[in-house]
Length: 397
Image (cartoon, rainbow, N blue to C red; front, top):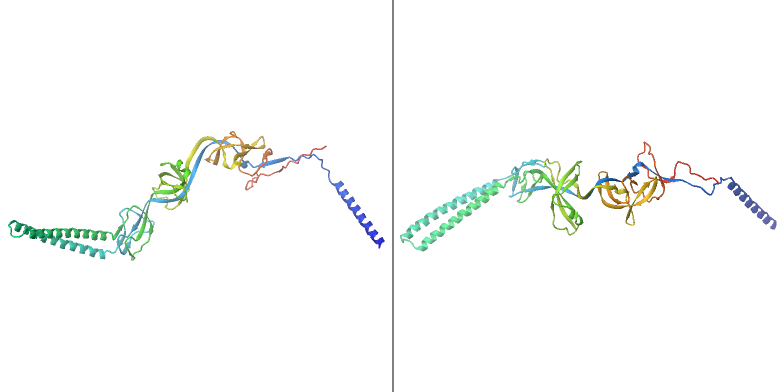
């Protein structure tokens, strides 16, 4: 038993020795690297990743949005209850002020008019009789053939008859107007936007029948934050980008509400747009750019190049092919011809090369070179840090 255990111990010791020898052999075969190895790292950018600080005109715009609506529009309603006989217009048709739009059944109103005329003739006849009676009683009173009381009664009867005539004339005017109201005319010139009635329908007074919009002048209602209202003035020009229209439309501020809205703490302003040919339509969405500040020939860089650390602005600049983090002082931020830009008050000079976009945290002091993009590349790659194509230099002892 002891002999067998000793044999196993010898075998284990031999295996351990063999393993140690093999490991030393592999270690001796591996290439030896000197302790001092220098790996050159370079940050590569495409030319599109780099821009230069330059002078430009800078404008700060306040963006407002809303829907265009017609300045003048009218809801055409029934003035009397009747049956619709004819509807002479449809949606999209242009109409003139005073043009007949709808004809209604006049049978009832013709009868009322004739009744009113008959009542007037009867009242006028009664007035003529009362007049003759009064005049006769006046002659008799002068001859003392009747009493003063009898004459006063005749006079009162005449006054009542005269009042009845006036009342009959008023009733006749009402009947004439009711008959005229069966013929519905356009109150303004414009375009029919909605039609909600068909021939044969029975409508009551004040029923909405048609809508007319005058597209020659449109208006956009826009909510302006209260902190920006001081930058808006009456007559100020506004550039509008209208949905579905490629060209920029120019409007102007025509009204400003004097009160702040309680919920949004904003102030409603109204921008008027001339539309003489009716090209723009009511209800389309528009975005307005209103200039609130402007500076000419100032040093600018893209807004995308500016980064912040603890509230302090900085950019990554390239000086002598080395990346440097440069603190800058930013002034007006707005739009230039090249796009959104920021004014640089200090920290850069004209022509300074900077990284155009925020590529995250980069290492200041690293070497930089511009990569030449391949002709078939679809998009610019993100700059990467690592060994370049040049082999890493190895110092030999």
